[in-house]
Length: 373
Image (cartoon, rainbow, N blue to C red; front, side, top):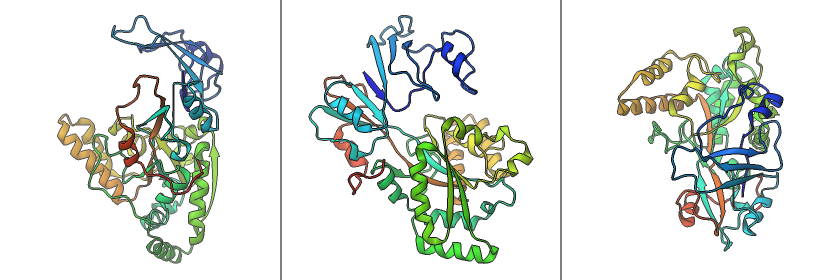
């Protein structure tokens, strides 16, 4: 039995009756996919989750060696993460996967093993397409990058379970640039640049921030960090079903894009996407989340990546794109935060083969017990 924090899964009949675009594209009865398990009962979508979801082994799976498990029962994770962890300890659940704070888990408990799984990257994107956008000014983008304390965010929002990132691609992803360094927290220099910018432009800086609701606490931390420097901030924390359609540029005319008055959006991106797809979504001329200004050189390099067949040349071009984004301060690159798999020891090794000591060396422990989750 498993407990997952997010597992979109539903039958076609459920989606046909209840779902909204873009999920409601499954209008026919199916079946869908060729995976090792089939949906037996229950559902879990953005809109509603049943009390239990049952998957059965697919007897027609193409690889006859698998699946080796006859059934999987998925239990939606409650808001309190301790419930699932305690259930794994006492054997009620076999394993749970979530973006837990390390303060949630008694890693020395004799009944459990923990492993790390790739989690999402979290970045902030400037709205450079609004009318008279201040975020076209590189000094303002630089000031904000220097004024945000990413280590404090990781400690107090993630409970230590995170790492500051320097670019759009995680270190293990194809095309990641190992030569990039994260922006450092430098409040003295950031305040100086901000002060000069406001004097030159004769303006105050007020930020309207958009976040999905599960990042609402992150927005509060950033607002508190920026307040001492004279930056005021308001934010809207939206359900993902409202957030992602709102930031999709394809739904707007040119005039409507210029009327979007928010300043920054914060999004979590799953690194399972391919490198080219990540760049394209946020920074290509046709990207569905491209709120940055048009950059002909960036579009030219991105097009070369799409046409290039030599894998080494592809990697070099992607690393060049990473450096361009970094040097032009196109984003606030914040952090990545791995998922933690907590497994009862009586269950076989279902997760990655990574021993507990290696895991604990690679993830920082929050200094403050009970940090915000």
